[in-house]
Amino acid sequence: MSASNHILNLTNVHKWVTDGPERIEILRGISLSIFEGEFVAIMGASGSGKSTLMNLIGLLDVPSAGSLQMLGRDVSGLSEDQLAELRAESIGFIFQSFNLLTYLSAQENVELPMTYAHYRVALHDRSRELLTEMNLSHRLSAYPTTLSGGERQRVAIARALVNHPKLLLADEPTGALDSQTGVQIMTLLSMLHQKGATIVVVTHDAAVASRAQRVLNMKDGLLV
Amino acid sequence: MFWRYMKISLLMMRSKPVRSILSLLGIYIGVMALVLILAIREGISRQLRELYSTNGVNIVFVHPGFDDVSRRIGHLGPEDILRLQEVRGIHSVMPRAQTEMDVRAGTLSAHAHLLGIDDEFIPLYRLRVLRGRIFLPEEVRKKQPVCLISADMVRQLFPLSEPIGASFDMEGTSFQVIGVLDWDARAAQRTSAGNIDVLVPIDWTLPKMNSNYSMIEVRVDRALTANQAVDLVTKELSHGEPKREKLFYVRSMEQFVEKTKSTNDKLMRALLGIAAISLLVGGIGVANVMVTSVTERTREVGIRKALGAKRIDILLQFLVEASVLSVSGGALAVMTGALGISLFTSFFESTFPMALPVAPVAGCLLLTVLIGLVAGVYPASRAASLSPAEALRYE
View 1 (spheres, one colour):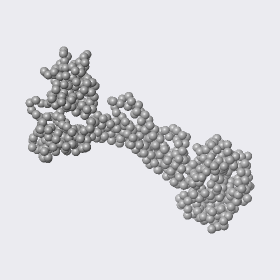
View 2 (spheres, helix red, strand yellow):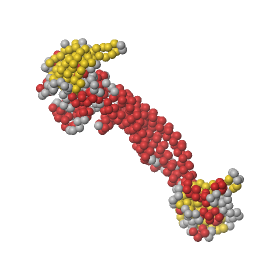
View 3 (cartoon, rainbow over the protein chains, first blue to last red):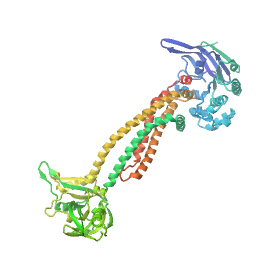
View 4 (cartoon, chains in turn purple, blue):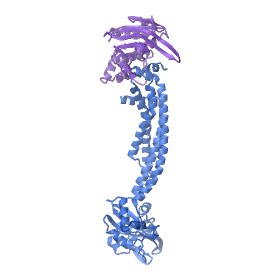
């Protein structure tokens, strides 16, 4: 067991893909700890391996070698469904392109992770409460296509928060927004951090990274 | 969870209406064909049942038979009637005898087909008496010169005058008309007597010279099945001697109805097979649409998995979707089919029978659920096994 305030612990993590006889190393030995209440930015150019690292942190993928512990639990032996369960309970995703389901309303989008985590109680109350916090109480039944970019990202943030995740993982959260809206979203994330949320943001934008307490730079599959 | 998937399925159908309708169409046509064939089958079988249903007894017909081995011909006479009448379970026995005569009333004349009957015959075969009354037992017993005539015969002999109570001449004997009968095609079929114009007490039509009957009608209690009734009559006529059984040809009306029904059923089963094939093709259509849908929604699968969906969640979602697609086609076909059939029968009921049998139609709907599930298995399992990281990258 790691220390209780460890959310995430990566020890000498490698990730490679095999292309015929060739093995392409994407991550070449990454060690990293994320502590409870931290705001961490991971920066790097495209091709640096930061997307792959984000997939590992988000439990969307598992390391080829090395150990990754989420809340003290090693993920290497977990089945796909066990990973899904762990994701539902512990991680909130915020994507660059929002990734809302267009045929569901804002409220239904927010409730989606709850249905997978089998939180049955007060589904609607919880989603309404979160959307109200995001100043979207008037758009509960609006469909994503009728929302502005900023509104969409705020719905996505509400969705990320709905299961009380241990870690908020944001992948270029301002990448699809104009600069002013981007600032608003980052302010929102800073506020969540002040309230105690643990946040990892993956970005190539220095202004976004500047919000974080700790900035990690990636290059060629390594943290530098 | 299930209702959520149902809702998603309906949302998907609404968002891609043309594709959904095209994939429904295959199932729709298949189920419609099944429904129509089932309805025709049910209609024919109901009509047969109605046509040949008699009041209270099973009818068994006996003809003299020919035994190939002993080269003997069976003989049916008055002693057989008496014998059968004594048997427990046999309600009554009547020889069947028909003849033709020239009839004359005043200046009008006609050629008539006569059938001799007893007093039970008309109610037993549920024949419709339009006017007047049926024979009294003593009129039959005492061979009274009374008769019932068909509506057709009324038109020929008494076009302008009152037939009830009137008399007419049949080859030297004057008969009094006591009733008018509706002898239509159904009556002809139900009684197996064909076209009959005049009904007289049985003794008038029995052969005068010899005492050989060409056919007798045995009415057996309903407590016995048709086969038991046939066995009972055969045993009694052959005096319990198996080698005499060949001398009589015994068949029940019910056996005849069943045989007609089963001939009809064979044809219907072949048609059902063809309809089932079209349903299969419809299922392939659903599978095709689902494969396309899964490919298009790869990213959605990625999002759902990132948000915590397990394999089973994705699998169920697409299975429910395929089933909803398939069942909608089936339900639509059943609804429009039922509507069409009820419209059709309200216009053509007597000439062409159709009726929706509930259980087989419910079976059809269940079948569409099954088709949806089978059609959905491959696309759904493909979606369920997508890797979340790759699916999220899918554009």
